[in-house]
Amino acid sequence: KVYTDYFFDEPAFNTHDGGFVPLEEAKAPQQPLNIPPLLKPDKETATDTYYTVAAQPGETQFLPGAKTKTWGYNNSVLGQTIVFEKGKHIHVTLKNELPELTTFHWHGLDVTGPYVDGGCHAPVYPGKSSQIDFTLDQPAATVWLHAHPCPETGSQVYHGLAAMVLVKDQVEAKLPFPRNWGVDDIPLILQDRRFHDDNQWNYREDYDPDGVQGPTALVNGTVNPYFDVKTQRVRFRILDGSNRREWRLHFGDNLTFTQVGSDGGIMPAPVKMTKLMLTCAERAEIIVDFGNYKPGDEVVLYADNVPLVHFRIHEFAPDHTQLPEHLVDINDPEVTPGLPVRKIVMSGMDEAVALNGKKFEMQRIDARQKVGDVQYWDIVNSNDKEGGMVHPFHMHGTQFTVISRNGHEPYPNEHGYKDTVGVNPGETVRIKVRFKLPGLYMYHCHIIEHEDGGMMAQILAYTEDNLNPHYKLMDMDTL
Ligand code: C2O
Ligand code: CU
Ligand code: CU
Image (cartoon, rainbow, N blue to C red; front, top):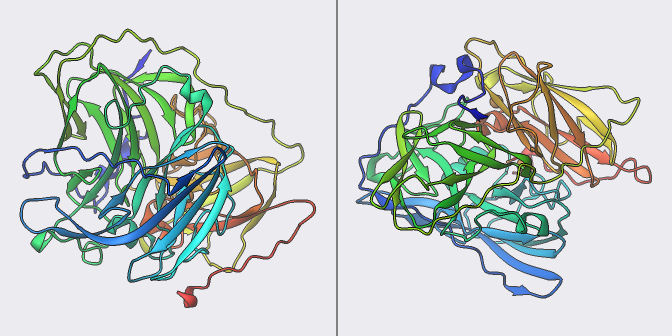
């Protein structure tokens, strides 16, 4: 079966929003797609890997003329790609070379909050650095790093503080997937910006409490990119790294592709489709077979009706690899008996956004769940069906599974682990949540201006022998 729709409710697409900024075809000449290089470890042993990640200011040439002032991780914008191997003890030095406080949030990693995971309680002050270390026990996945200093997350991510992070393991390594970085394993970090005078970005001027948008698409920080296809099959790791924009993707001639991974890793079964919609912070790994094209052809990836990436087909060796029907096992534990369903309501728009009727407060712990317990959470988007928006609900510190949408089956590509799920207006999405590590974790809408605007809360994951761990929490005033 090949799916041919975007799954989400059409009346909820951001195109219907009064403040929607449609993408415009870039007038800049085509440029080769940037491939953020793999970050080299400072040191590596059989058991440990050491990295340094520096948040730094820089300048980036996006368009002819002036360079744009940007921020990035070990790079002028976005970042080098960081690879973590499951089971290794990872040490990271976090350096802040920016003129303001930042945090380093590992979106999608199962690491403890509120410090290691780099939410708003883990500031690194300008000119300072800090150290974290962790060992991952989660499957191979495409996750990411972004700044998370509440309520400046929107501004810092918009400045460029976002990078792709890959988790690798032995299970994924055995699957017949392309994995030659930059050749047939290609990141696609999707963002949109508005270029003002002198090619500068201006977050404050473009501010919209429902999410900042711009008319120019950037893919890995490239305006109007092309990519030379030199192998028959290519794997794309797609990340919606935008503050607000949903990406509706399809190829020019409705080429069928196969989704094999979502936020938390490889999906149990591949899903064939011609259209893919991602909401903010979601990831999808797809495999595209260019076998029916010949050298000299061009295949275009579109977002809505705007060309996003031009794939130029070159000579390649035939590849008859078939994907297995079953890819990985998903461990789906039973719900712990006796636990009520936890209800999370995302309400409002603009400045009125709230979670369970409240705005986020750094010092308030909103909920508790015991480590190891498995609980249903019902995520409600109380916006109006007509005129509301899709809120992408995200949790720190764990990967969940999606059980149902308004009591119906989740979308066909939602059967793997997820950390972000788009909730349509008027919809209740039931997810199954289990924390593996004690800590304090945030959960929020990933339209970043909604998160900064307070559509966020935090939960304590506790253990029997430490019912009330004490964490030093940030305060709005200490910013
Ligand atoms: Cu990607 Cu709390 O965020
Ligand atoms: Cu996160
Ligand atoms: Cu929202």
